[in-house]
Image 1: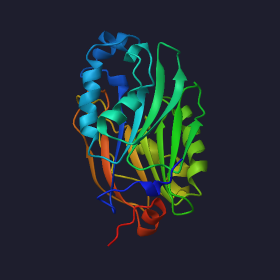
Image 2: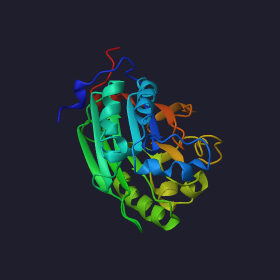
Image 3: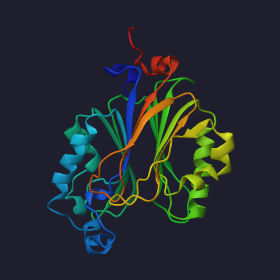
Image 4: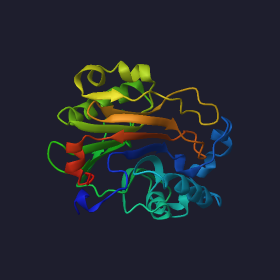
Amino acid sequence: MESARAARTDRADRLRLVTFNLQVGIQTSAYHHYLTRSWQHLLPHPSRQRRLDLIGEVLKGYDIIGLQEVDGGSFRSGNVDQVAYLAQHAGFPNHYKQLNRNLGRVAQHSNGLLSRFTPSRIEEHRLPGTLPGRGALHVRYGDGPEALHVFIAHLALSHRGRVRQLDYLSELIAPLEHVVVMGDLNCSPEQLHGHTRFRTSLPLDPVRPLLSYPSWQPRRALDHILVSSSLKADNLQVLDQLFSDHLPLAVDIHPPARCRQAMGILSDQ
């Protein structure tokens, strides 16, 4: 895999990140749609491609995208790998798909990465839990102790499952310095703060929580972006509704010069 040094940006001191639970491109704007549109989890819909096009237009302005609940190319998505399709439509030179729950030709439940920078390494992790099918991506940009580490995760619905999964992620994150964790963590800020490892043992600070679920009347902060203390974060915002039952979250991070140098994006100034 090519080095991250091959990538460049006109904003060398700022990276724009988004996390988004896509819900396979199903338009959901009311609770009753979970019932009336549930068939779209198994069958294709003629408007799904148009929705992907609109989502791709929004994502064009960002650098690193973490996706959850995307389809890897099965009957329900019209055999379209949604990660690859969004990468092509939005002009991302790098993309990666993690297949978490394989239902064959019917459904391919996946996490995804879109990136303007070439990762130096990507690792897939199967997260522990009461039910299989939850996963996390560990994306590393650059080499050595100053590399940037981005984790994209979709955690379990059950409290016990999430605790085990946060314990697992804690072990991976603890020795790292420059870290971002983002995704649908399926827990409130209070539950996240209540996890001992994330609260006390890790160099990780939650960016201000924002309400992201349900998208049509947000009342709960289930989607999160967490950053290590070495990464200044600002411009955190909820993006406009993009058909899913979750709203996308966006943030700008400012890696220190030594991290940018490890990534190969240190400005010439």
